[in-house]
Length: 292
Image (cartoon, rainbow, N blue to C red; front, top):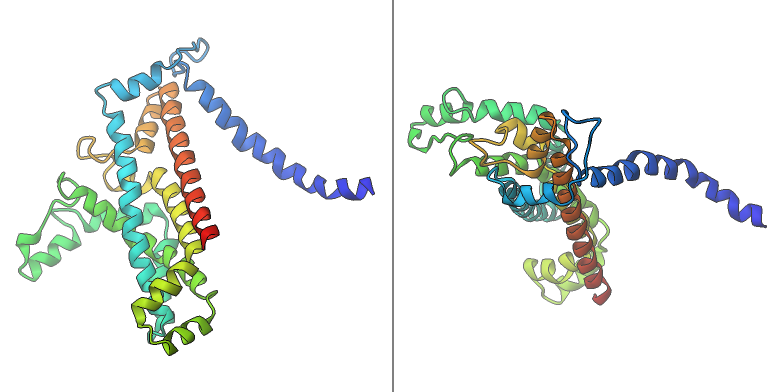
């Protein structure tokens, strides 16, 4: 009997060992090295410096703190720009829009493209002098709408949000569609008999029944937003100046310059922020589900 109980546990050994080896151990080592002066010039003489790296991040004149702020801002705005449109599109497609399978495919396609390809393509499209967008505006005599999409401080973040939303809305929509398919049609039929209009059905049936899908999209979106790197790095490389730097781009620059201790300190801050926000979101959404 004991062997039968223990036997299934052996299946956990390999994945658990891989998790400890490739995730848990590097994470713990990274946290440890964030308290040291580890760098390319003193690999053999690394010293413990306590909170010095963290103090420098928040007090130096290199705008690391603004990188943290930009990361949080991107996380919030990018999620809003994807969640709301994706939910509305999913509801419209579920309502029986003609050609909905074609729309689903077209909307989902951008999410399977690599970030590098998307970034390079849009970097070309948004080029001020030779880009397709400004050329089109000139062609239709709307040249006054031309912008330095990737170099103007007032526009650059809007360009990043737009490209990111273009890629991500389809993926978020797909999760919402999966959630909508689990809602019994009898609920909507009963609501229609009672005289509920479209928006009343959405408010009282769709949204409460989609809490699981909303939570999944929110957690995935927050995790993605906090770790964003590719789209920012390829489009602007943190510019103009350091206006679009985020935690990961700063961390990449520090690591490339051999400042490993500072880089791991920034990554540790990112880990803590991600863990806190993730736990809070899951607890809030789970509590609401229990109340429902």
